[in-house]
Each structure stands twice: as C-alpha cells, then as structure tokens.
Length: 288
Image 1: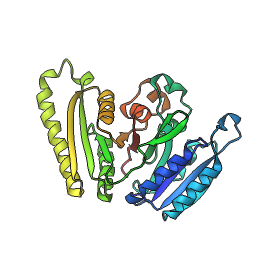
Image 2: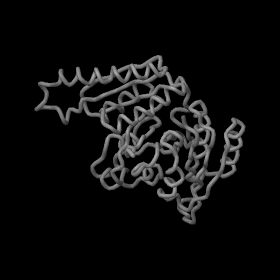
Image 3: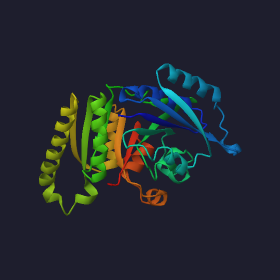
C-alpha cells in the first residue's frame, strides 16, 4: 500500500530511531525513504546528542534492506513545504513520519517538537513515532511494527473515521492480523438526558462494530476484538492502550487549526500528544 515514507529529521538525538522504525514498514509495501533534513541557523535548535553521522549510517542500513533513499534540505522545516512534498501523491502512497515524546497537558501551549505543529493541518497520513526517554536514553514505542503488531482503532462512525478505517483495511491486506475495534459512548453527550436510550445506542453501535469486524476478517485479519463502553473517549482509549499492549493507535484527524485545538482540544489531538504508543493520524480527505 505505502510506497514512500517521508521521514522528518528534526536534528534531535532520536531522529535515527525514526529511520530505524521506518525500516520495519517494508511489509506494508514501502520502497522509498525521503528524509526532510532540518537546516537551521538558529543556535537553540542545535541539540546536544544529535549526530549527523548516525543518520548517514542509518540510511545505509535502510538501503541494505532494499529501499531507495534521498535527502532534501529544508530551512527550519516549514509545515507548508513538508506538505508540498506529498500533496500530489495518492492518499495511500505516502506516509509522513516524525518522532515525538509524550506531551503533558500543562505543556501543550509550549510544545516545541515539530510533530505537534505538523499534525494541526495534515495533508496526508502522519505517523507519530512515540519516543520514550529513560536515563537519557531514547527508544521507540513500540520498537517496530510487524504483521503481529496489535492495532487499536477507535471510531465514532463519522466520515473521517470511515476514511481512517479504509486505511486500516489496506494495512490488513498488507499483513496486519490483530485489531481491536473500539467505540466509546461519550458520557458527556449522553448523560443524563439520554441515559434511557443507552441500550438502544449500544445495540446500534455494536451492530456497526460487528460489520467493521466482518470487513477486516474478509481482508485477512485473524484476531479482531470489539470494545464498546461508556465513558470519556480520551480516558478510555488511553486506558485500553496501556492495558492491552497496543502497538499502534489509528485515528481520524480533522484539520481544525492550532488555536482551536490548543484551547478547545480534540480526542485525536490529545491522544496524538499523550498516548503511550505510536499514533497514525489519517486526515479527512475531501471528495473530488
């Protein structure tokens, strides 16, 4: 499905880990790795621990796996230029990859990592490779993706969620076997005035989830589970990620703009920043 991986090199000490993670996506069809290199004159962006030689070695390892590679130099990584690199590609042909550590709620306005700027107005699917730091050592969560990886797909049955599900179907066709489908009855929208209809809502939504499960099984998935609960979506999804060892969280993402998302928030935005795993955001594609 995926042909090109656009890897954003932020001149951070964990950039080489994102390239290593990219190697694991070969089973999804990836053949080309394009590195968008951050060229900057800002001294405060020269991060201790970043070594361009490590990036060069990582690219050599990628080429040994059969990938073609090329590097582009971008001044300060403008979001518009990143999007232009893939804007003419088919939805399923390219994937933007960028590393990011988890962001606490109190730091949201002050986030400096490029990933959280890039996700505000996405043009193509974006994979946020979660970076974990312990004792000044970095690692990715998970270490890699494979056909055995566990995918969590929460859905609100919107058009954007439908498009994200179509992306998941392509991943299943490429080899993914284990998927958990999830829907949360948002307590803030149901209680207390619609509590009497919760049985009705649950039956309707379980039927919807069963239909999605059937579609994935027809595509080749061998272990598809369903979770239908009532609660607050961000909290419940985060809990399932941690309790079920989820390797990748797939979410639909509507572009709302950075100001609206910071002060109002959205489930996809919050999960992209704070989930304890890597997150794939599939933007809403306008119908032609």
